[in-house]
Length: 218
Ligand code: DX5
Ligand code: ZN
Image 1 (cartoon, protein in one colour):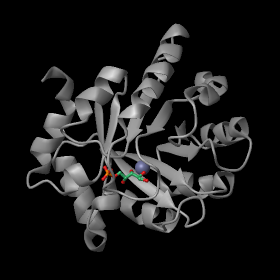
Image 2: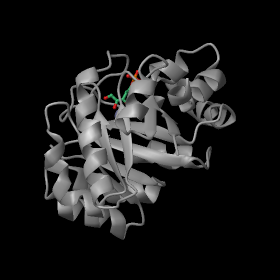
Image 3: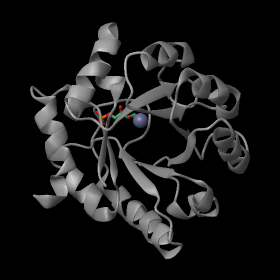
Image 4: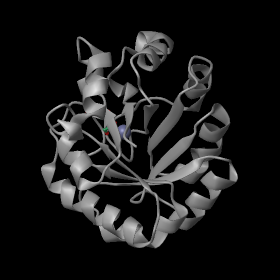
């Protein structure tokens, strides 16, 4: 099943609660919350206290993408604040197996993100313990960048490996996903599409979300 997770990095931060409600009305499945620490990536966004407040505004799945150096330190805060899926980067600090166990122990779904330079095989040792793999289709840090088509073999490789093990893994793509690139992502094996500027920059986000969801059929 295809799921659409609008990235709130592109929303109006002055009215986030309303934006969360609007995304539900527009048919979003999840809400993608980009957390950046200014260290793992050269940008700073938001922390757990804000997620806690936003939790009161939406019952959609909170898909928290941690672009931070020390995920283990902050994961309990985000879990308590109401995160559902917690994604950390394989390139961040700490033993990934322990980070996965921590996320699960807090009742959340663990996911690993791969930066463009990290090969698919690096995530294979953890696949059986994960709910999702995020294949970045831009360098993490900023919205509005161009989609990297050369990440599609990575999506295919992760899907192939998951299928060969009989795993019903979610595969997410994040960065530059729009009405032009969504079909390619789905055909490569992705089923969770993150879209920031494509959704929030659209004059009709509801139509854009529907078109993203049905991209493979067109
Ligand atoms: C980038 C973030 C993305 C970003 C995507 O580091 O992880 O979630 O918001 O934005 P668009 O869809 O505009 O490329
Ligand atoms: Zn993201």
